[in-house]
Image (cartoon, rainbow, N blue to C red; front, side, top):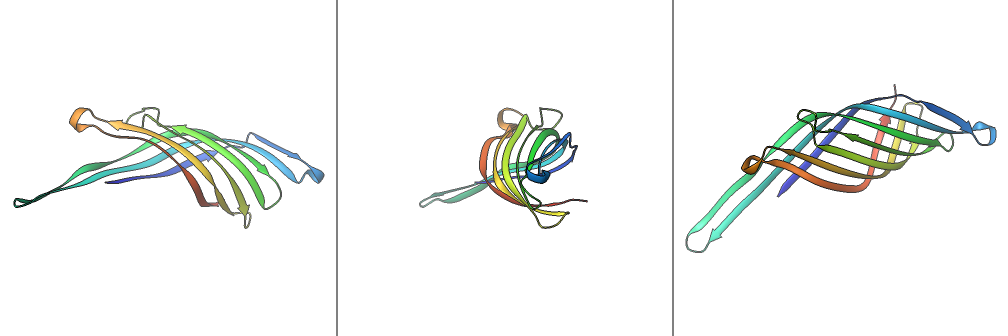
Length: 159
């Protein structure tokens, strides 16, 4: 069996709170709601091979793939501990069964950001995601109901 799920998010965020605190106001707390579009690709394939002694073998590949674009909204909370290090948590939800979108994809992630410069940030943390997608019915039904969790590493470029 081969199941692959890929996603890319394209979003805009707006900072609605930026509060400084601590000694000399070196720490900051920020709230940033965001929204955008998510591209998703789902492939499900299964190779079936049956061998019967004296008769031979039969092989067949079943499955297909789907791709879609869906809206999503979320919020990110950021605590800048100092100039280089930040802690954050974010959550979003999307799809909502609109058009060809998923029934619902939601995720929550918490992590640490390290700022190499004003425009390059290393991100690392842990994410939980729930994906509910289905199209068609009966023999033509295609879908997935998946919960996944694990560490992540990424780069953010600001411009």
